[in-house]
Image (cartoon, rainbow, N blue to C red; front, side):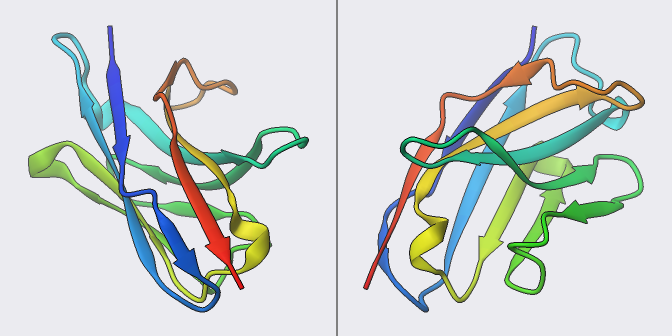
Amino acid sequence: QVQLVESGGKLVQAGDSLRLSCAASGRTFSFASYTMGWFRQAPGKEREFVASIRWSGGSTMYADSVKGRFTISRDNAKNTVFLQMNSAKLEDTAVYYCAAKVIGLATYQYWGQGTQVTVSS
């Protein structure tokens, strides 16, 4: 079993920066075998992909809406994944979820509880 715990969500103003963290743990979890992702869900909207990173190698992917503003990174020693959010926009307001999937699979198997990010004008 894998546990994912997000933190760092808060109320910020448009243009501000914030960093989300996701701590991963699990007795049988082999971090090198997983891709970690960030998703978000705004009120009344479906959950959408934000960014992902392979634990091994560090290759990344981003949604077009966040390219150039958000950066996903990882700290292998701390089993933690980060999402650095710069130049926040009103439309970034959402609950942000951390997720993990085995490399090569299409779907994410593990999800965190989410952390709220609110961007005000």
